[in-house]
Image 1: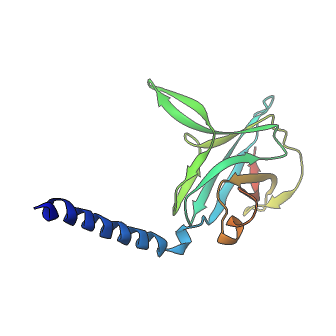
Image 2 (image 1 turned 90 degrees about the vertical axis):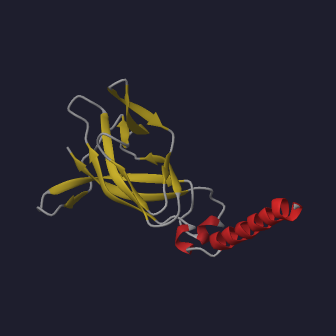
Image 3 (image 1 turned 30 degrees about the horizontal axis):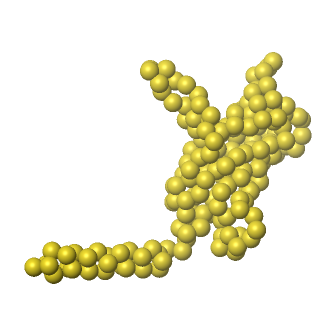
Length: 172
């Protein structure tokens, strides 16, 4: 009687636990480490007389989960990650400390949702690039800081975080 009630369920549980552990350890190596790229990065310049700009982009993660810790740029004195929430039928913007980046997903920072506020933004005339229409567009340098390194080699380095640097197109 004790075998049926106690021993068999425990044995089944241990076998399932072992199988799950082996599955995790032998699983797809691509999702063990993040593989992140930033796409469609656009900075909206401050309105005339204002000093607050906004940044929109997509984080495409072809690997494991990660976390966006911060963003910095030399054209802004202070940068904050924000989201938009609805409270009592009123849309409110709230600061978030970090943003979780799920494995194998695209996280969109766009109007009406997650976005980045650039406070004290002073966008100088500087480096330009031609867009598809041949029009000169100014570029804004950005540095993204993530919690997890992108590769196993980087995980063994002394740095606990890693950065990704790119330039966003400025649209006035």
